[in-house]
Image (tube, rainbow, N blue to C red):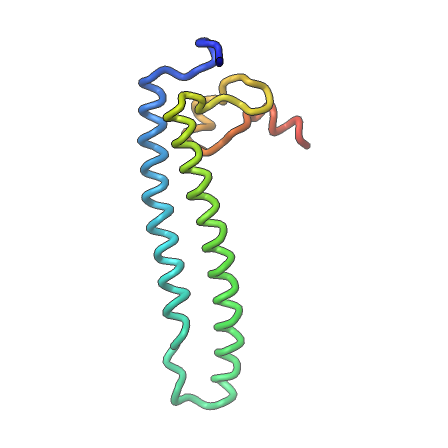
Length: 126
């Protein structure tokens, strides 16, 4: 069991939960936008243009689809990490560094709410 001195208060956890939920909502909206752009890439309205331009456009479209796919994958991972953070809030283990066992700084968690390591632990990895 985690020592009481190494846990955030209920009020802090509630504040972090709101931050995380807000970030999940925004990240999901961004993911929907990325997926929408990916689906709309199927027809860029070049049906009646010259074959040379169309070939160039198709090459660009392929690159765009690959970029959108990578963005979508990253966004899905971000959402998954945020949901894991939400789980840690619920079981009251949120904000505890998985390496040092110490509390991760509030300012860091406000900026990177899915962080699982303190700055100290991150610096040890280098």
